[in-house]
Length: 374
Ligand code: AHR
Image (cartoon, rainbow, N blue to C red):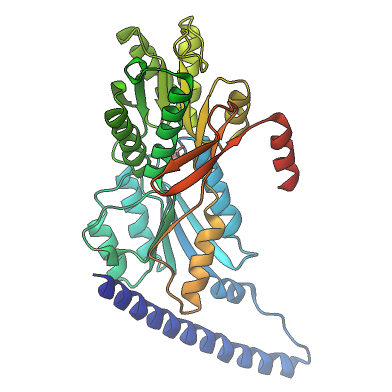
C-alpha cells in the first residue's frame, strides 16, 4: 500500500515536471517572439498580463461551508495565501455543508484543468468516485482539515489537519484530572455531548475521546446529540436536553459556536455556567479557541476548558504545493500541534499515553502578550 502511494506520487511529480517544462518552453518561445517584435518597433515590451496569469498555479479549493468562526478563519487563511501576488489563481467554492455541492465543485475543477485541487471535506465517506476522477485526470488532490475515508489512500496526494481524537482525549483528561483534584466521585459527573456534524472527522474523533473516557472513568454520559457546529443548533439542542435531564452538570460542546448557543440556553433556563459542578453549576467544555468571544468567556469562567483546533492551514497547504512543484513528496499525513486552554488553574499538566501536555492558563495579561507577539 505504501509503495503504491509512493509510485503514484512519483508518477505525478514526473507528470507535473513535464507539464512545467512544456509551459516554461512555450513561455520562452513566446518571449523570444515578442522580443523580436519589440525590437522591430524600437522598444522593449513588458510581459503581457495573460502571460503572467498563465504562469500562476491554479488551485481549486472546495470549502465545506461557513458554519463556524473556525471555518471563517480557515477560509481567510486560504484566501490570504493563494493570492495573485503569491503566484496563484484561486477558484473558491463554498459547499454549504452539502457533499453533493463539493463533488460538483471538484468535477468543475477537473473540467477547468486546475493544477491542484484542495478539498476540506464535510464528512469522511463518499469520496471514492470523484477522487478517482481527479486521479484519472492527473490532478493532485490535497485534503485539508477533515479526513476522507477511502479504501485506497493513493486517491489523494496528502492531508494536513488536526488530530481530533487527541483533542477529545485532552478535553476529557482535563475533566478527569479536575474531578480527581476536587474529590468529585466519577458517578457524580452527568455529562451531555453536543456533537458536531455527524460523520465528520472532528465529530468522530471528539465523540470518541469523551465516550472512551466516560467508560473508563465511570462517568454518567447522558446523551450525545448532533449540534452541527452551529450556535443556533447548540442552543436548540441544549434547551431540549435541559428539559429532558435535570441533573446535567457538564456540557461537552464539540466547538465554540455550539458552546455559545448552549450557554445562552443554560442562562435562559435560570441555571449558572461555571466549574462548581457539585454546587449546581454547569461546566462547559469546548473546542477551537479561535475567536475573542470564546477567550473572553474562558476568562469569565463561562467556558471552563477549550481544546485548541488550529484553522490556519493556508500557508501549510502552500508549503505542500511548493514541495510538489519542486518534485518532492510531502508526508502523507501531517498533524498540527495544538494546545489546551483554561482560566482555571486546577490542572497544570495532562498526560496522554507517554506524552505530557501543559495546560495554558489564560489570563488577561498573557492574552495581551500573545496579541503583541502576533
Ligand atoms: O473541522 C474543524 C471543525 O469544523 C471545527 O472545530 C469547527 O468549529 C468547524 O466547524
